[in-house]
Structures are given as structure tokens and as C-alpha cells.
Length: 190
Image (cartoon, rainbow, N blue to C red; front, side, top):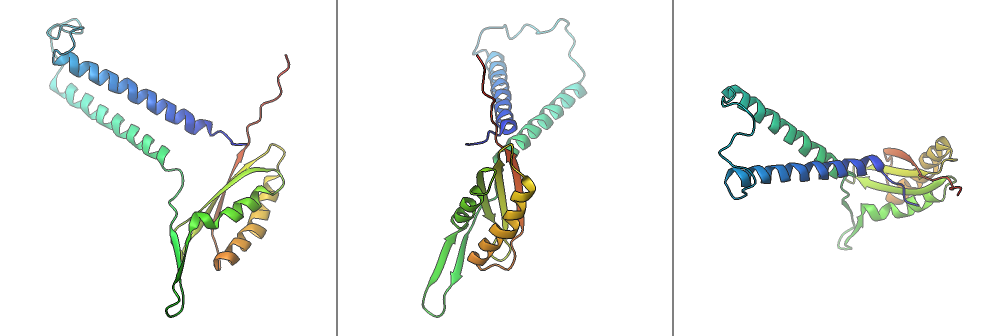
């Protein structure tokens, strides 16, 4: 059962909506200004009065628009950065025997399978990031509403991670565990 990350979905939806509204407004303003779209008379003022605002107002409006645009780009960038990039690990053999390559995300598949077998765990994913000499393990666990998170965390740190360290020939593996709760809807009575 896949958990829904509703805040991230809402963020992406709002970003898309804001982007479409801003693109449409900009396209409308540009096409009307150049006379390509004849919905409004481009020589007629939009607001009553004939006086233009002071020059400093245009600079303030431009600065605020640029700041808002940069904030939206930062918000969009934060949506894309979900997990760190994994790397390929290489072990060199002796003399001319060759080398062994292992994708870091492949190394975590048995680990996630083990964690998914723990009581109360619905789904698990793990990312092994960083260089081979200083890796970090990021674990995301989707737990059921009846799960004991402290027991799951203890089993991960005392059983799962040491086995992964042994398999990868590591002395220590810093681990970050993120817990999510499975969204379950109550049965509807009709």
C-alpha cells in the first residue's frame, strides 16, 4: 500500500497553478501591449486618471516581482530534491583480477525487504548516498496505525543496519530514519 505524500502533492499542484496563471497573465499583457491581441485598446489607460506613478514605484514593483519569482523558483527546486543521488561503489581486486562494481541502490534492496518484514511496516525504501568511504543510509518507513515506531527503529539499528554494514564491509553506517503513517480510510456505512 503506497502512502500519499499529500503536502508534496499540494505543493506541486499550487506551483503548477501559480505558474499557469502567471504565464497566462504575462502572455496576455505582452500580446495586448504589442497589439497582437485586440481585446483592450492599448492606448487607453487601465485605471482612471492620467498621471503616471513616480519612477521609484516601478523600481519597487520590479524588485518585488523578481523576489517573488526567485522565491517560487526556490520552492520549485525544493520539490525536486527528494532523495540524494546514489553512486556506484567499486572494490579493486588484487593484481590483475579486476574489480567489482555495485550500484548503491541495489545494495539496499535486501535491507528494505527485511525492514518490510518487520511487524507494523507497510512499506520501506532506503537510499545509500555519499562516497564509499563516508556513506549515509536514508530509510523511509511507512507504518500502519498500530505500529510501535520505537520497536521498528530499534530493529533497524540493531539488526538491519549491522547486517547491511557486514554485507558492504563497512565499520559504521550513519542512518537517518523517516517514519510515515499509512493512510487508511475507515469503512463507509451506507
